[in-house]
Length: 280
Image (cartoon, rainbow, N blue to C red; front, side):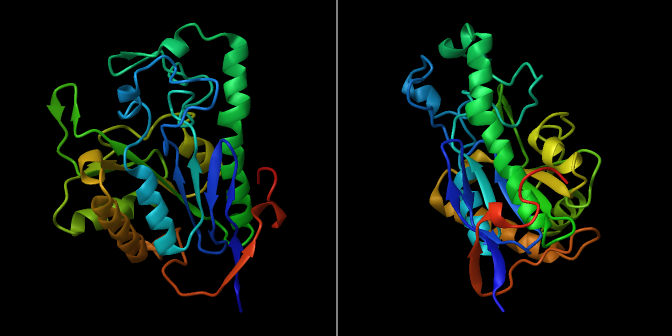
């Protein structure tokens, strides 16, 4: 019997990768691209600044694409630069639209009007989060508590200080996914794993708070050091590693993920599955 699937789709604000609806795992990439929509130019920045971490999470997109394909799970990826608006921030967060980021002044954001702010929310931020909600709702119809794994990347040096961790797991109050991730990565023996490092996962209003904490779903944010995933080889290695680790922890307390199995494929549009529109 073919398993129900989330079908792939695209919009200007986001892309959904298809995968098993009953797998119990959804992968998310908030800062997948450095793309700025037509009409925004480069926000007044030189092109070189758009290649930096201030514009997107370097390497994260390809890791997510490979990881979702390896596990055959759905993924949601943004299609706009975090410089336009940051989907990993709450609407009341002062860093939602950055005017200054790691020493770079963002000319296109310096004199932002209320109308322009609302347009960016309506056209880019909200549709991205709505897409995540739809995928969660669709998956939730086939799994009691799907887990959310958000993939980010971090710079190897920050303000002159070398960051020693190869990978960090960020979490808040729910450790159902974070704790076994940390323990299993540490057990591999060749990694320095950050527990809420290099950042804290206790950020009210961020993507995992909105879709994980608020919905009572197991969730974690994984940060990968950018020098390890800048090229295709590194991206592949880390996608394979995360897939292996997720397979090891899939039956831990509160998870029950069905990943890594070989199932026939049958595509079903996310919006057509029961409960695909609106919160639970």
